[in-house]
Length: 353
Image (cartoon, rainbow, N blue to C red; front, top):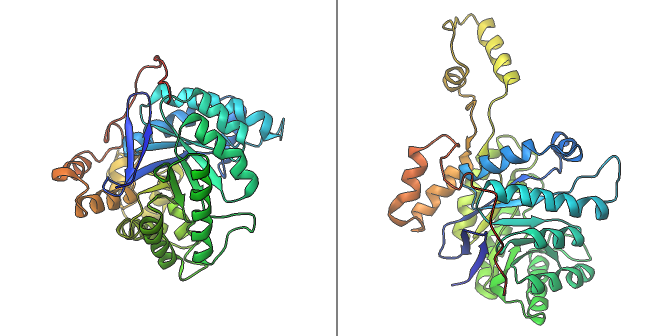
C-alpha cells in the first residue's frame, strides 16, 4: 500500500490507502482574508496562533502554512514572502507538534520554509508547467520531502478529466527522473465547483480511482471548491468528503474548525426573537442562546465536515476499535478535543536523508 510520510520533530502523519483520512488544515493563509493579511504585514501573529491551536484541537493531522501576503509597502512577494514564511513556520512549530505543509507559489519562499521546518514537511506544490517542474522538483529531491502535484500545466486547468490525469502522470514520471518515488507524490486532481459543472463530483471520483489504480499515488484536494457559490456549503462538503474517501482519496486541504458565532450574529438573532414577542430568560448566556436557536456555538469546535470524516473512517475500518469516533463525540469542544496542543519552543532539527 502506498504511504506518504510527513513528519514534525515529534510526530508522524501517514497519508495512505489503509490509513485514516488525513486532514490538512487550511486556515493559516491570508488569501481572501484581509484582516489576517493586514495583521501579518504589521507583524501581528495573534490570529495565526489562534488558527494553529484551534485546527489541531479540531483534528487537523497536518497544518498548511501560506505566507502569500501582498504588502502595501512592498508588492514584490519574492522579497517579502520568504522571511514571512520563516517567521510563521518557526512560530507554529513552537505552538503545535503536528507536521506542516509549506504552501507557496514563490520558490524562494518554499526553500525558506524548508530550511527552518523541523522533520519532513509536505511541499505545496508543483504543477505540470515546465518552468515549475524545473524549479520545484530539485527542491523536493534536495530536501527529501513529499510534494503536492496539481493537475494543471502550461495550457491551464482543463475541464477534461483525461487531460488532468495525463498531467498528473507527466509529473509522476518527471519526478521519477529526479529519483523521487511515486509514494512521495500526492496528486491534487483539481475539484471543480459543482454549481458550474454538473459532472464535477463524478469527475473527481473517477480521477481519484484512476490515480490510485494506475499511478499508485495518494491524493488530496481543496475540499470546499466543490460547493463554491452554492447555499448550505457544509451540507455539500459533508456529502462530498465521504464519497471522495470511498473513491480512494486519502487527504484534503480544508477547514476543520467550526468558527464561533459572532456577537453581531447573536445580537441580530436576539432582535429578531424579541421582535417576534419571545421573552428570553433574564441573564441568559450567549452559549445557551445560540444552542437553543441552532446558531452553532460561541466556542471554537470541530466542524461538521470533521464529523463526516470521522464517521467515514469508522465505516471503512480505518478507526481501530472506533476509538477516534468515541473520543470525537465525548469531547465536542475544540479546545483539547483532539490533542496535539501546545508544546515547548525549544528543540533541534531532524537531519534529513
